[in-house]
Every structure is written in C-alpha cells, then in structure tokens.
Length: 119
Image (tube, rainbow, N blue to C red):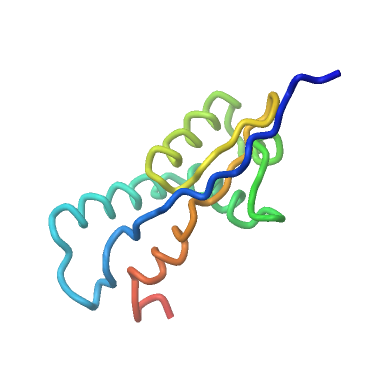
C-alpha cells in the first residue's frame, strides 16, 4: 500500500512580463524582468526543456519523460530549476517524480509582448 498522495495542481497567477514593445518603451524594471526571462531561455538546453514541457501531451511532463536532452540528470535538474526560478515553469511532486508545466499565460504573454512582430 502506497502512502504517496497526489497534490492538486495550483495555477499560480502570473503577471505578464511587460506591455507590447510597440505600445511604449519598457521601464527599467520591465526590461530587467524581461531580459532575465529571455536570458534563461537563451541556453539551448533550457529552451529545449521548455519546449518539451510546452509541447508535451496534456500540457505537463514528468521529469522522467524529458530527461533525454544530451546532458546528465543533475544538469537537467539544474536547468529545470533555473526555468522555475525565472517563472517560466511550475512544478509538482507526485511520489518520486516531479511534473512540470509551462507557467500559466507565459507563452501568451511572451507573444503579446512581441506584439505585431510575433505575426
């Protein structure tokens, strides 16, 4: 008999990083927040992990399903931590596995920020 319990997935409120680039110049705070997000995604392994989670069936991925990206498991964990710290991913532990989701509204906010240039 297992004592593992599944925790409910909490949808955190995510504030968009900033207004569309064509709306007005970014404030220093908005630019710093946006640069940090893109800096995290500037690493090819992190971008690949983000893509694997975002495109995974059901919108969430177990770390066991996305670990094969050409680096060691501790390195995968490090990159996933950086993505979480940047607010790009959320995570939930279920038993021995951790499941990841793209943070609510992140992709939409990124597209909105790029504004007319996204099309």
